[in-house]
Image 1: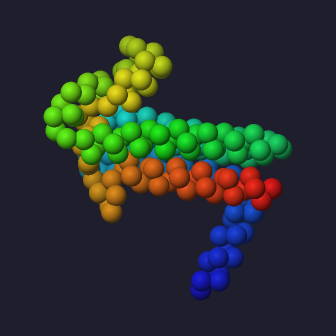
Image 2: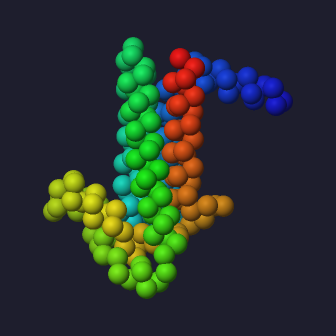
Length: 168
């Protein structure tokens, strides 16, 4: 059983790497939206920003699937994974702040799409990364919270893409 799983993983890694990155990142976004809908949750602006970064990973994987020069597509996956790790690590940092420190944060007032509409994309991202009380909420947990799971997935994307670059 172990050897079959290992052989299957190697086959996917060698033959369907870009497709698996695209599908898995897309499924993470769908899962987050479904969980929000099922449990009537409202994702904070930083959670929504994380979903956009997962979308960038999916688009990078799809782009890599379409082009012949895979290195460029893999570089996009690496960049988006690093950005995702930075965003999720900021949220994890905010979640571990003291109550007094959280009270001083002001960046999570409006929903993310409204920030983009009123402030523009650059200012919306800056303000979102400042964080706020809603970004500090731990939310649902399944061993880890959403930010911690996001960090783990971005780290896995980064590592396997580096291995893929080195093997090709």
